Amino acid sequence: MSSSKASMARQWTTWGPVVAALDLVVAWGRDLQGFAVALIALCLIAAVLAAVHHAEVVAHRVGEPYGSLVLAVAVTIIEVGLIVTLMAGGGDKTSTYARDTVFAAVMITCNGIVGLSLLVGALRNRVAVFNAEGSGGALAIVCTLATMTLVLPAFTTSHPGPEFSAAQLAFAAVASICLYGVFVAVQTVRHRDYFLPVPRPGHDSADYHADPPGKRETLTSLGLLLLALVAVVGNAKLISPTIENGVESAGLPNAVVGVVIALMVLLPETLAAVRAARRDRMQTSLNLAYGSAIASIGLTIPAIALASIWLDGPLVLGLGPLHMVLLVLTGVVSALTVVPGRATLLQGGVHLSIFAAFVFLSFSP
Image 1 (spheres, rainbow, N blue to C red):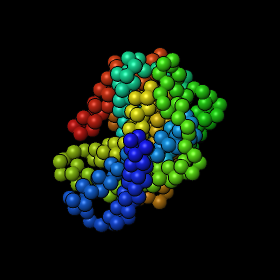
Image 2: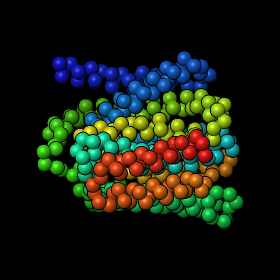
Image 3: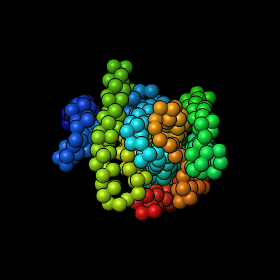
Image 4: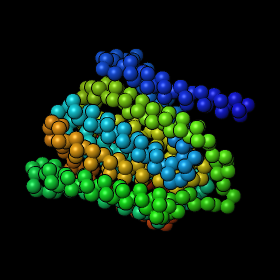
């Protein structure tokens, strides 16, 4: 029975990304109506679930923290392509898309994914245990990158409005990519043990002892993972006009578009983090959350800075006072959560409350 289920899982996780990619090719450039949008949404969900499966296969082969890094970088690179594509055709209307999407990614990862993972881990073991050194260092980089790229533009005076001048944007881009490079080097080489799951007697899950997949299976899963992520972001792009029209018709702020897109793009990481928490691998969940936040800023800002050379319209990066308050609150609460190396339902509930406040205030500022 178990082999039959495994065979079925392999079949749908293989065909899911393929069907979603074919759907993307057929629908690209067309004027989509209600039924077509619903079909694309189903394909997007299938691609997300398939991406989580293949990410876990690759992660099991390469081990932590490389597995978390693969998913975070893959999603972020394709997310950059989505942002650039949206900004290329929107003019002044899309000048805040990069800021809104990056800030939404930070709030989703640092509060939504972290809070949900802590909640699941604490429900399973009463106390969720992780490595404070690794998670604390990652959080410090998230706060630094977010402040340099999303807060400082609101206070600089070289350029009118919450924007960087060309020189300031170049500095922010170089600093972001350098910090991201340092983080990857520390995470994967110099202090790799800081980012490994904390072993707990009597809590070893079966995936610790299962044989890793073969090279052929790993390469196949890596290819299908990339295909699934392309399908996720591409299909998100296809339904984004429907989202934009719905947001405009409802009289909601334009920032809601960035929030919805970030939620869809980060679904694979969210599901993977929750599944890791259920297996008592809280450090893997935090690696996914903070690693995704770092990649989202550290790769997106340099790419957008480069793309701004030929993109028309302004590039607004500075946050407003409301979002700055939420960012500061997130940084303070995250530090209090990470420093002890242990967390309960309380910390999970606090992070989810901040995330709920972010979502609510995005719709009703």
